Structures are given as C-alpha cells and as structure tokens.
Length: 439
Ligand code: HEM
Image (cartoon, rainbow, N blue to C red; front, side):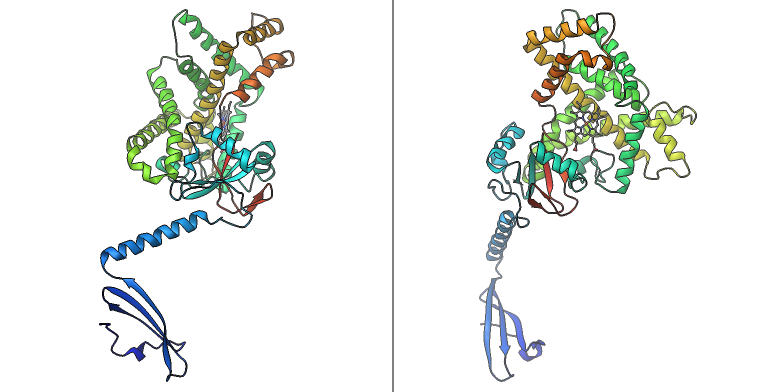
C-alpha cells in the first residue's frame, strides 16, 4: 500500500506541479505530477529511495564513492597540467618509494616539467627544471607566494604563525621583512658575519683536535657549530658543545626534521593517522620542546632588556614591540615561532651541506688533496680562509658547488600555493592549488 497525503491538491506548487513523498514496501517514493490545466494530469517522475537501514547504507556508500571518484578524476579546470593516474583516497602514492624526489623526477620525464599529481584526495602540481621554477618563484613569485592549508603544520601551528609556515598576507609580509632587515642588520649574509663564523670555526677545530683517534659523530658536532652561528645572532650567545640543554635541543631539532616527511604524507592520507599516533605525538612533543627553548630565551632577554643596548635579534624584536608606532603584529608568540623557524631552518640545511662535504671528501681523497693544496697555497697555514680569498680558490669553490648539486640537501622547497588563478608553462593553475617545487 502506498500512503498518500490526504489532500494532495494542498501540495500544489506555483509551477502547477504536485510533489510529494510516500512510503511503499520500505521504499521512500518521490512522486511528481505535472498538471497542464488542472484537469489532465500524469505522473512524470517516480524516484524510489530505500528506507530500510541496510539498503539506505548501501545507497549512501555508493553515492559517496561515486562522488569521490568523480571529484578525483575531474580536472580542476580546463588546460590543467597532465599527470599520472591515481586512485581515489590514496592518490598517486603507489608511484613513490623511499626517495620521493627521485620518483617525482622520473614522472617529470614522462609528463613534463609542470605536471599534476594526486596527493590523496587533493590534486597538486609539481614544478621541476630551471625555467619552470624561475617562472613559478621569480617571474610569478607573488602568484605562488602563499603556503597551502596543511594538516601537519596545524598540528603545532594552527594559526600559521612565524615565517616559514605563514600564509601570505600583509602581516606576514611585514613580519618577514622585519626578520630579514634585522638579520642583515646583525651581519647575516654580509662580510661582517665572517668574524662570527671564524670564531665558531676555532671552537669546531678545537673539538676535532681533542677527538684524536676516537670515532665520533661528525654530524652532531657540525650541527652544534652551525647552530651556534645562528644562536649568536638570534640569542646573542653561543653554547658549549657539551651543554646538556643545547645538546638536547639540537637532538630534538634533528628528530623533528626526520619526522617531517612522514607528517607531510599523513596530511594527505588521513586513514593512516590512527596507525601513526606515536609519530604524531612525538612530532608534537619535539616541536613543543623546540618552541619552549625559544620562549625561555625570550623570557631571559625580557628580564635584562636594555633599550640602549640592542645586541641580537630578540632585543631588536622586543624594542620594536615597545615602540609607539611599532609593528603591532610582533607578539611574543609570533617571536617564539619566528625564532624556531630561523633556528631550525638555519641550522639544518647548512649542517647537512657540511656533512655531505665531509662525506664526499672522504670518498674522494684525490679531490680533498687538490682542495687542501689550493687553500694551502692561497691562504697558508697561519689563518682561516676569508671570503676575500674566493677569487684565488676557484677549484675549492667548484667543489663546494658540486657538493651542493650532488647532495640531497633540499630536494623540495617548502610547499607553495597559488594565490590566484594563474598559469605555468602555458597550463592553467587555479587559485588554491598546492605547488610542489622539485629542486
Ligand atoms: C645551505 C643552506 C640553506 C639552504 C640550502 C636553504 C634552503 C631553503 C629552501 C629550499 C627553502 C624553501 C624556500 C621556499 O619555500 O620558497 C628555505 C626557506 C627558508 N630558509 Fe633556508 N636554506 C639554507 C640556509 C638557511 C639559513 C642559514 C637560514 C636562516 C638563519 C634559513 C632560513 C630560512 C627561512 C626562514 C625559510 C622560510 C622562508 C620563507 O618562507 O620566506 N635558511 N631554505
């Protein structure tokens, strides 16, 4: 039996149609009558929807699957970059082994320097090669200046504070500009930084001399030494290599970086998160420890702050916040995230470059000899090399560039995101598309 509304004419719509639902044998039926002149009528549509729980569940699952599949295979816009096939939910992850950057490079041989990739349920664009990267980061730098929405970043930085994770807007630009100007003011990237580096190298050489014939973890010492150069600018001090607090924070940073790739992947593969809970907890604890260390440095600086004696990045930041017309976005919390960014980004990449350098010199003693002889002739044994010596050290410089090219120091930039509808190598890239830049 179909149960029909008692007065169907009361359901008459403005367009002269009657539409109602009724239940028939556990099926929800949608019925539509179109009336031509209120006398003749015919049933034009009947849609059956199951009402028993199991059939309803099957129907919902089918619709969800159909929706996910359609969304997955629909290109986000016309003339979108081509790319490999991917499965719903897991996307193109089946193409990747342990060296994702190498697998992405292989795919670029087939699909070109700008291609699309299914990252779980999202579609990202991969950019490779000098011309495409220049177009993305230089020529159209502002079009691609944003950072994407990121589950892994939101684990520790839900409001995208600091510099490295910050979403592109006026406040972020001012924060970044302030950090840039202040770092340069303290000699960063200028010859005046040489003296700080030379001072730290003396400590590093002492450390190597003390070791004599013992086996050591060179990476741990290089990390501390590079980090100390950054610390001297940010915190106005260096730490002893054996300082337990410093050792703890350097190790914390190393472990945090190691987990970063896993966390990035989990951002696209949510169904794997429950099986990676200990990694997620670890990542959050390590990040918290890193920021706690930075906060301690801020508190110590605030206690002895002297506006007439601005000696490092934290002092300069605190002074700016105290100015009447200072940048109001420069809060303690922003400072904490910015310090963590500079501390981590500044230590990791430089130390990794040096570690690759040591390894390659050990593996190629003939090149090590040539570098040694060139420095010996141009500089001598009584002083450290300076930037000024560069013009006489062409073989050494070529070796350093070779190390950076060969070593997998930064296979990717940080992820970028299109701020507006734009294009790359003639392909359309809609606003909001995540862009993975393969170096
Ligand atoms: C061998 C040395 C280094 C390499 C290879 C390197 C590489 C990179 C790369 C590839 C990025 C991503 C850029 C992007 O997403 O567009 C980056 C970002 C960054 N690096 Fe470095 N870096 C090095 C040294 C340093 C140092 C010494 C510092 C600072 C003390 C630093 C601070 C930063 C910061 C703050 C960011 C985020 C920048 C932003 O969003 O504007 N890096 N670095």
